[in-house]
Image (cartoon, rainbow, N blue to C red; front, side, top):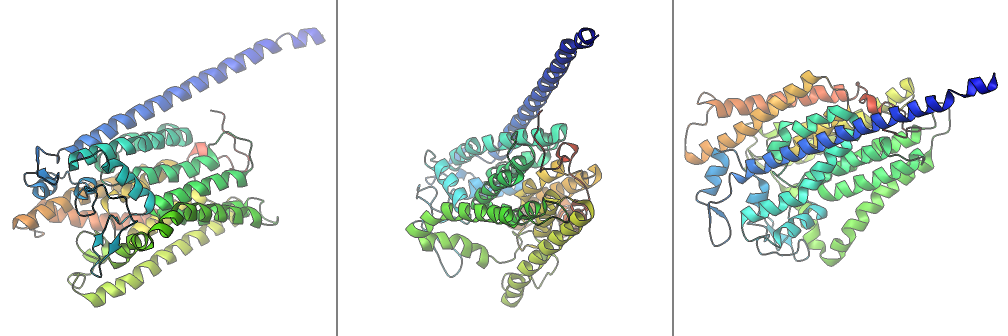
Length: 462
């Protein structure tokens, strides 16, 4: 009887292995499709921005004729092409080391308004470039792998829901609007290190790797640094309710992020402190105006004009206070959910913090939508919210550049004068209302099914 019972075992094992191979094959096919579609969308994104290139160039390498007019009228503007001039990028000056900033907030000597890794990326793209068109092409070539990597990581984490990244309109509009694909890859990579990495390492080790990636993200565009707090709280609370908190693990997470940021920035601080500091001073001195696209400008007109120094000073104080208050609320709600559910929702808290920042910060640049898009993939946000936000974002994107064109051309830019001003109103206030709602939604919804396995035990096998 023992022999009879044992005979079917090889067949059962064989069937199980075959099923595993089929699942693995399907998983590889899915990832290939997602990465391929991401690549095609990135090509479309480059083609969209390249409409502003040439057909001729002046002696400084600026596209002509009428670069600014065409960029606004045809809605093909990019910061990449614009900043070819004005930051010594066209002179191939190494960033920060000899830089400075004037009392009026004008950057000089190679300093750019972004953290050091973004500045380095800009310099690398500029070295082989002689025109703004070449600079756009090299920047796109350098950043495209980060966009593809993000698609692959999201596919691993959320499966077919990652098509929202691969085919989403924001990738066409913003992939090469500014230098944001690397920072998005760092943020998504941090989630992957915690939830998707095939390893038997404990949560604390995976969280330390995630913290390093968030630290690198901070050195690109700052905002991932905020996610270190919920990540540390995930580790702190991992032992469970009633058990001793993992203070040592949480401190390791914070230390990993801090050390990463210091190691990346320290050489620039030593070699050229004034130029390094100027990139932060620029953001501090930046005034609320029509280019900042925030509720602070549109909600307080006519008091919000740049010449109103009293209002500008008030926003400089109030905006960061409210952003930090939103962070505190998000972290506290996450703590409440941990006490009720037993797991700290660090992804949802991070998404809520980002929503608070986008809503309340004095600057809301168009490409910030790229920062938010992966959270629509990673969390079970209802599609109605997603579609509504993307529509409002598209209205803002098209409306604001068309409005710039009308202003510069001396045409009617009033609310009754046509689509542009109306689209901006829809974009500004629709986006603001949706961000407020998404702040709440992010703190309530669970992550996608692929992320629902507790991170203390998750080792992905497919």
